[in-house]
Image 1 (spheres, rainbow, N blue to C red):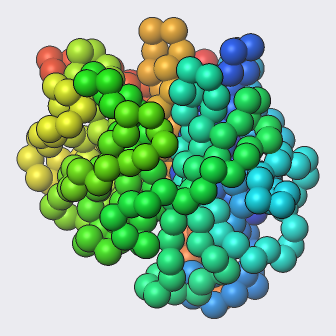
Image 2: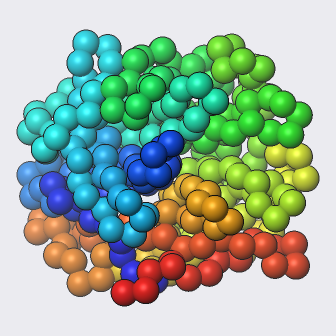
Length: 308
């Protein structure tokens, strides 16, 4: 396992979402944590105040930084270079899907730059784009609470679109809502309960539907016949990607299909990276990828496909 990408501005690329456009160009959208700053603010301010970083690649391995999605009126526009030093809103965990006509982004947004976890409204906001560069705001989704983050969106075999997300007001489990038209959503309840987790991603592979969630000690895997009813793979403590070269587990990722391969991009720590001067925390992160496969009805991880 080798790191594929590090954010050249703040060295805090997290929550990667990779898609491939009609011309074969690979796009990575990610949370641009301000990991390298010594003075980002107290507490968890460095995890807030983030923009969405954008990188592109011709092969999914070698990535070039293209800039950040910057607010323009109510929309977002890809702007080359680093983000402004001062921002007034936090953007996290972009989910990007093609609906057959347009690209849609489901973005976690938080007012301001919180220095602690509790007490701040978190919304999932929808944007649409024809080209992945300019995004028109559709508005926040009416979901199960005002503490929702980390959207994953897919169309399941029954023809409905579903959005899975972490609800911090429901003990940080995965909730689900469904829609026939991506315009109105019905809250369907808890999709995955149990221990707290975040960052769901959902996909079909090998005749099954799969959900991967980040448990901060590795990733839990769930299997489904229909994308609705889920059973955990292995025991309640079983995880994949419990370790990365940086010493910690793999965190919050998402998949992209390329031909017959399904690649899983995720983030983890950086081996030998400088720690934060005041706190000694290992804040910096890198993006990794591995290929996913199904063997004897179980999801397994393979190599990165990188010959270097």
